[in-house]
Image (cartoon, rainbow, N blue to C red; front, top):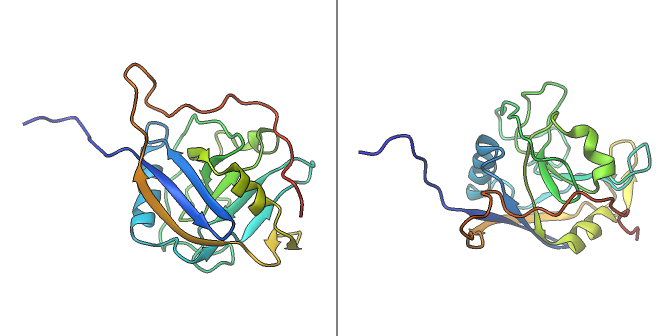
Length: 197
């Protein structure tokens, strides 16, 4: 009998939206509990037919911030009915990084997640929110979501929220011997604002 080992399939999350697909590499080495929580919700179909209820292409300081979804009510106040403790993650915020949204209480994350739009706009979130993956593909889709016309600037509520049709879990690309466990992440560099439409 072997003890002390945990074996899992390496998967990516394909987030299918009305604006296209986002393919995210998940990072169990950075945030194993949060990654598993997100995968369980995806497997259960929890995210199916929800919306990106919050889009903040430019934060107060004028830097690209986040797009946020995963609320079954579409209001920004919903969740799965339980909370997830804040998990320390050393994965820095950068354009395309996924993190778990939460309230003022650090241990109040549920199902809502966000995708960062720039390092400049989200660097202040490092260590305050749990990051658990980043985009491999779909930056054009991310830009289209970020360019959604806003109905309420105080909440970031879009006029016509983009649909999150479903999250598919697919096999991750094969690992190469001698490479880090985390997938290759682009170097942190200045990002340009998402185009407005």
